[in-house]
Length: 156
Length: 225
Image (cartoon, rainbow over all chains, first blue to last red; front, side, top):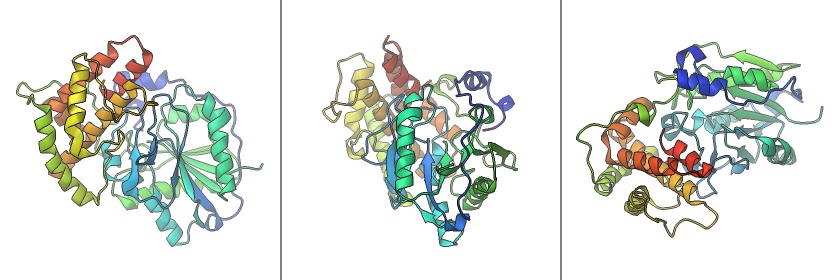
């Protein structure tokens, strides 16, 4: 995001008063092996899903799985915030979900491979207790079962 | 520690400083532009590489700034909203006819995008969007409107929101077919200032916002603000 001083007063206040979770530290996991041997998956908060899958609703703390071979034309966004510009996403899903860029890195041998599925939550959540206690850990277990070593987390 | 190594892209540095994810790359791009610019693979790769480079850090949390300034886009940091755009005096009134006209441009969009479209949240095909328009008009007028396509587990205000999003997608993508270089701000000024659909969605928003039900108000906030 541009620096706060470049936003309108209303947008700046919205961000400064947003109840972001405050943590003292983070559970840190080291990379288990060089990236060229790792399997990577995207976890996005862009509210994306396969067309025909259940759209996200306001305050929705569930997730959607997106098979990694889903064509970009079949991915849609139902994020319930209009605080971001949708036009980049209309043009190019890679703006938040860089699946084509990652396929290129895999083809070049810079990343070992992609997990069988990526996952999407919806961002701009003012209440995220269920993601923290239930749906977030569930996605972590699925990623682990799918042999994923690295998660790339992207916003919109 | 057992687990999965993560790296992330941050748009709001102040929030990331509080949350302290293990690794985060702060980028100076507008909301909606996390990887920089659409269809700019070179910039997207630079952002991606910078995020992946953080994986080599032995300890965290790590919060690093992407070195570029806001060169990724000429768009404003946050999108312009309907309430700041005055409608023109000669806005057409017939939304259904306008929607039918937009479909011609939308078909052109589908040809150039390889079939990619953001329409599809309601499950109603674009060929039947006149029905969506009639539903939204009846709803905005305060009627007891509904559509048979709404499944029982989707609350009415959520469905109204999906209808609004599908209609916006038709217009935005149709506009991109007319003018491929248009940015989000230009399209928003056209949609809210010059189209009948934009004025209809303002009225839909007003009815949702007049409700005491917070779920209706939340839907209003997502239709127009």
